Length: 256
Image (cartoon, rainbow, N blue to C red; front, side, top):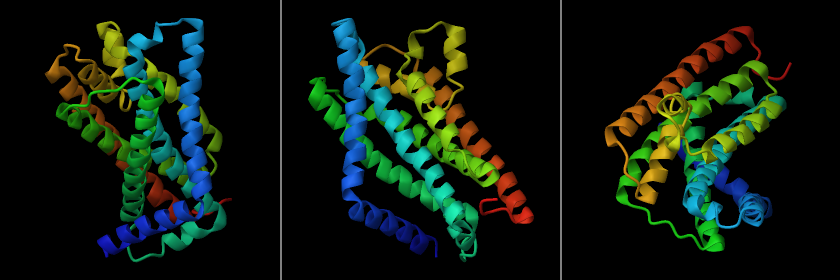
């Protein structure tokens, strides 16, 4: 049953992408143009300065597109399901709501990774800044994926509780774009430690230093990344369990 449900989610997403191919391609083009606008605008103001940290900007922006495609789309889809009454029907499925949303998160993350790879390749092509990826980058990527699961459960919990969070999602998206483009690894110890408690920040900093070939403390970033991913995953699961039980008890799965 688990694999059947997961396969069904993959098939559903692929059908949607195939039927709305023009919209999907337009979203990818818009994301790429957004970064190029930042790149061209910064170069026109301070030519040469952005080039010194272009690889870092590409990595930060690519991770942001992964968050946007995974967490935000998961929240938007859940809101639409609640609005149309589909969410109540999904809760009648023979699998638990925890497994249902786990499957959706798995599918969203997989598809988002594919989109992010396309975006990253396009950005490197247009900026002519080719990044040399090494096998060591697999560690921060794994921790990032775990954190994304936790963030997904948090967003779903907010949708189940408050129903409409579109504006909140938009605020979080662009606030987090600024956070991921900021190079906290170059900040002071206190600011760096505090920033590394935010979701994905230590992983992004770790990736940037691996790619740039900078010297870094492996144990420091490994411990912060592990703590960050486990903390946000457990927090997301805990809040989801509480909210999930509450909305089922109150019978408030659909819109008010």
